Image (cartoon, rainbow, N blue to C red; front, top):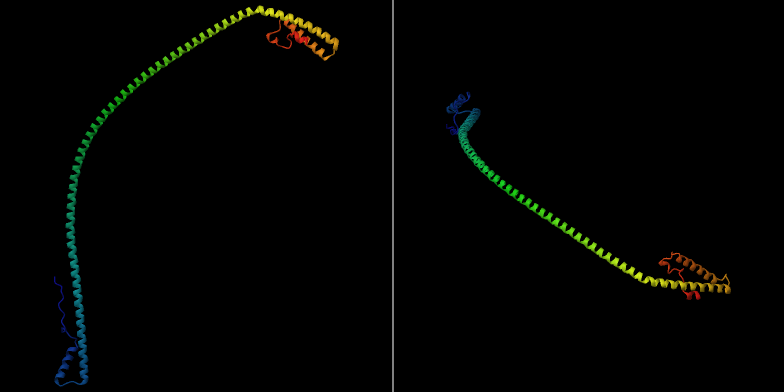
Length: 298
């Protein structure tokens, strides 16, 4: 549909003029053509012509505005029609695109279903294969575990037998050591007993020899004792005579006389004890032992 506006005329003549302009214009023209006009009439005619010109120009502008408005409306209608047509085209294209997308989705869905079915089939087959492999691995692992357990049990029994053998050997060694220790103790005891017996025998022999020696020197000692006793008696007699001489010459109260008398009494006491058998071997060198005759003489 062609909605291009036609070209505007330069000064179109109006189809209808104002009601008062036509006859007046004709009368003026007739008057001018007949015999001329006055100034007043010319001025009035000029004003009428100018008024007609303005009216025509106003009508022209009005017509132009109306025409432009009509063409604007037509342009708006054309744009709206184009928009509607474009919307219809877009809607149709959208429907076609939606239909293509739906078909593609359905195709993808069918492909996914087929792929899922293939995956399920493959997964089931893979699970069966894995289950078979797992069962075989479990069987192999069980056999290996049983073999390892048997090896461990066999090794444990061997270790126990070795431990029993070592314990028996250790017990035999301990018993042997105990027997050897007892033998050594018995030998040491026998050696000590033999040594004590020899020592006792040596002591007995030494005692017998001492007895024999004592029996041998006893007569000599008795003879020497008698000689000593005789000398002691002689010494006492000499001492008594000296004491009497000192008492006669110095008096009984003299210190020398008192000292000599005390020594004489001590010697008499020791002699009485010796005669009674109470003098021991340690009392021989005591102060109460008999003095030499030379000491009494002094």
